Length: 424
Image (cartoon, rainbow, N blue to C red; front, top):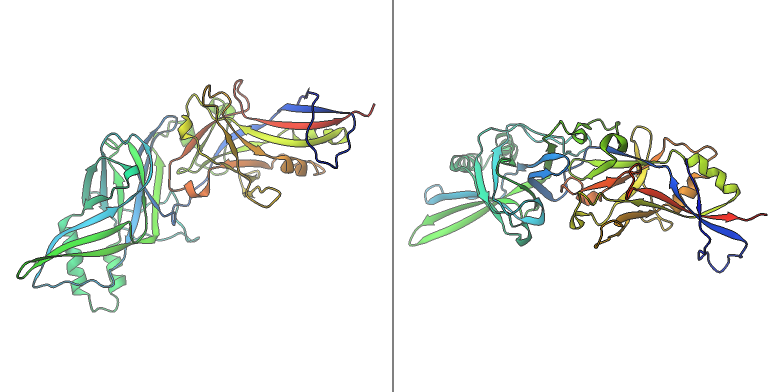
């Protein structure tokens, strides 16, 4: 259903517009329907290892753990008579991103994998993938997370594990299949956290210069000579597993990509969440009714306003940008919307810093709505989906709680600015 609230006014049409007697009308009660949906998130090749635990205010506990494969070093050298092992250290450098409480110590564990990391048929790995690992960690490190300072996190690996690698490389140094044999015996590791102590999740850079194993050793001749060697980690198979703990919470029960949680079933609220793949869709059930307007006037502007739930969100938690695209019946995503210049259509964020009542994201849907109204019969199974930027998916726990259309205050809505022709 839709209603019209008429307001006489003017719109800047351009120099070619010939003035006639018209009414500028704002239609602000077009029915829209918001629903939360979920999709798997690609977490390989993001350049970020996400590790830690976050207690989400709506969705409960969320854990991220990161998997790495090892590569045999190409220029490894070791003097079996003179060289003395000191330590093998895993080095990670924060990106600066974190979520949660960083004022308490985090406790990270490194576990050796017992299963080789293999990519899916599409060449990717997702937040729902996992591989088996040994229960006893080969490293445990407690530290105070300072992500903004980008201070390295150094985790010393178990000496027995480290020496076995050295022995292996010495034994097979001239073997033609050294690399494949190494990767078969040393499948890599997963880094996770102790959820009873850790209260934040952090992202770490994944590259040859920022995440690696550093082997410390020394020789003693006339004086002590210290030596360092670096083992790289495979960036092509590094990925993040991200999962929710509290299955009794309705949002965490949404596991089927074809299903949706309507705003009416979730207290008038829908959710975006990057790491777990939550998006929301916007359906326009009354779009067919708007076709009647085409004979009486013209829609000159269509604006979709998405209102965050500021009773839950903090202003500094709001994502800066949202994206919008086409979605079909079984949550089949067709692609992103673009503007008239073929650029991806993005939101504009308006922030009410004083009262928070007029904080919203807006999308200019003028071209989209007018295009849909050219259809002979509007297919109401086709809707819109809204999501976070791809760069944040799979490498963060960024989120947004949004008011649906059905609630009374600060609800999300579609605004149509309409020129009504006065033919009398």
